[in-house]
Length: 308
Image 1 (cartoon, rainbow, N blue to C red):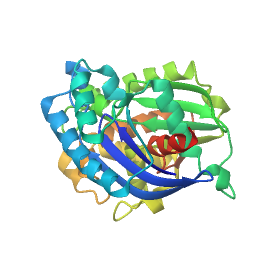
Image 2 (image 1 turned 90 degrees about the vertical axis):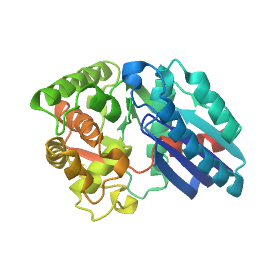
Image 3 (image 1 turned 60 degrees about the vertical axis):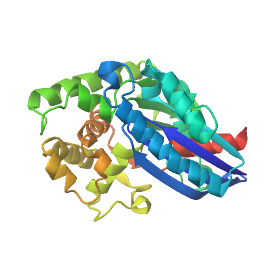
Image 4 (image 1 turned 120 degrees about the vertical axis):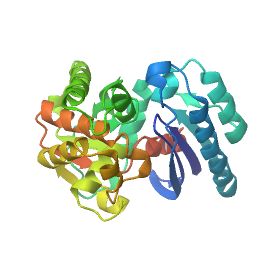
């Protein structure tokens, strides 16, 4: 079966077209555009006209790819920012006009489950998968999902901390001031404590980190000369490596971050906030390593489409 999965988050919108046979997912097209749909949502409670224009332009290009590759099933999933806005109807109409289906604005619980499926779906075929239970952490633009499980989630919580939200709320100076970093850290630690009441972190044997903030931290920790998904996927970073990269990013100017070789231009403004979320998760819970995954909620959407 050929499926098309679209994940529309707070910072980016992504398309995966894949063939799925006997639970094996074979990528046909994978593309991402940083549209910053959630820009200002934390403050205004609505999508800005500029953010919608950027998002609809990306969807026009996605529609061409979908027409070209003709998937059997399509699903459009919208996450954190789309749950929070008052003018969601404009967004929904624009998606339907371009893609032909309405977006599914999913709950934090479903987002967590899809992230877990995407992150762990290939482990069944691995000769030496990392030890379970897994704590899957998906650090997005507006939210971070915490999911614990072995073959499927046993506990999960979505919290309202993410790279865009932390940057807009706290890390506003270039570079951030010490007090701004303290404020962001306090916000993140409160979210981790909230998640810990629902998700028993201590049961996890492997931490798996997902999404662009985590993979970018990995690219920097590995000293890659360019962003290389094959080198990043499955990389194991120590807590010391994550902390060192996070500290460096938070003390850099925007120009300095922009000059980093593996840095996507759309992540320059928000990478410090995303890195800080990962760093605090590891520091607070004394987790010494994180396995970095390039497969995430997008792959989970595709796998679920093929199962249903």
